[in-house]
Length: 291
Ligand code: GUN
Image (cartoon, rainbow, N blue to C red; front, side, top):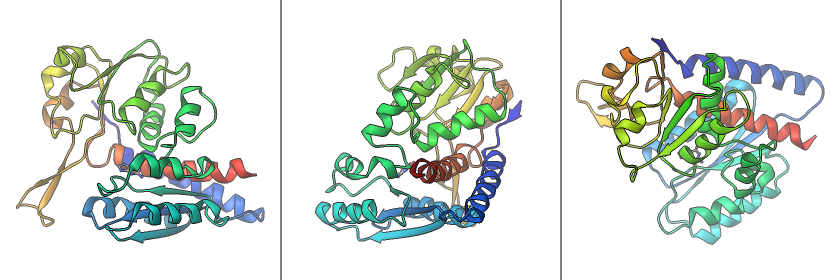
């Protein structure tokens, strides 16, 4: 069994980005600049946004954190987005999800200038992805593709089962794995909460990508011997033996599934760090596409 270390791969990608930034700067180019909008004070969202800002420092990007009150009106948030759209210093920005219930996430996503949509959630970005045109790929699926590439995991002609059909992970993941490309060229099954015989479907996968949002949902009987398993889930579960008071669990019951796998990604240290590396790659692309 080979552990798919997103931590390792993301560090390599960050080193490559840092070199590119040095080159850009020494050629008199602009320092790439990412902004992140955080609405409210959800603990997990704050942690993710802080990690994104820290990653910018690591690769030599500029960064801006726009912190807004939980009760900001939709109109005021849209005005903030308009400012970021029109600020030439900012090459790309993200609005951390989820947003408070009184704000329409789709409206907010569509307000972002597609040229700065480094999360890849805008309909223009998703449409380009579907057509295999150069575009900002959604960070999590993009990170998974890069992990499969790094470990030279064979994908052509394989059966890839994606569990979960969210707009930001499962659906785009299924599109990327079906692309005529490497990684890709898979026969893809997109399974979800209404899938019949989910266990059997999962157990027929050569590559199983799990983004179903339920802690330790995938058990050993749902995995084929020799499969590659990528775990997108991340759940904070109370654990009094930890200093922090919680531990992190994925969507896969790692201890019993790992021995059956050719490759498996852990939680933490798997998909999570790759998501941040992809966001940085997209921000660099935003700068390159401008020139
Ligand atoms: N919430 C969970 N994942 C993401 C992500 O990739 N981007 C944003 N903006 N919000 C998220």
